[in-house]
Image (cartoon, rainbow, N blue to C red; front, side):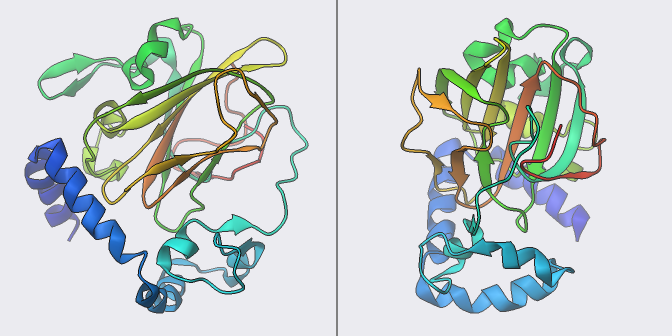
Amino acid sequence: MRRFIRFFSLNLWGNLPSAWQRALSKGYAQVYNKSYSRLIIGPYCKFNYKDPSYLTQFKPASGKNTYQNFQDFFTRVYKEPLQISCSAAWPCEGLLCEYGKVSDTKLVTVKGQKRHLRNVFGELGNSIPDHYYFSNVFLHNNNYHRIHSPVSGTITHIEHIPGDLVVLRPWIYKNDPSLPALRNERINVAIQSKNNKQWFLSIVGGPAVGTIVMAQTLAHGSMVKIGEELATFLLGSTCCIASPLPIQHASVGQQVTVGKPL
């Protein structure tokens, strides 16, 4: 099955024009907004969550007492605000699939061209110091799909980059798990922390992601607190981070938790 998915992702879906990927994704995503899609939530949870207590910390995004559809479940929110006791935290939940110093990251071939992982961050890329640390967190379907601020500070840059919607799963790309982040549509955000350090986030979309919904209060010059919500994914996603601090509480191949110390 994995061999088929990899072949489909690289040779079929990956070669479709961006407009086709977007149109097909939009139609696919609309299914999960239908009320009947809530019928798959129960079987989905039994298959994906070994610890049933994990879901008890969330409530429907709609504000209703029960999930209205699958999208309402997928974009669920915490019942209680995140309690963060550190100065720098993970902005999302997911699998840490790539990590290293920005200066040590290798070039990746994208559509026949060599690109540095700095290019993930668009206009911001060249301003990222060599000694910064690059992290790529893949949010699997069963993860919590909201992105929060890793630090308290000021939004200094917001950039939307149109692109493809290729499949995100890191095992498909073997030695280049961040390749989709160089191709796909994304929103890049820079945050200047209270100690004047810049933090860079790239919020990357994928197939069936009809929209990356940014927080209504998010704008250039706005203040954010650590743990404050920045964006929501409507199905599937990746978050890349360029940070001035090294990771101390996780390694590649491990799950990270939103709000927990880096």
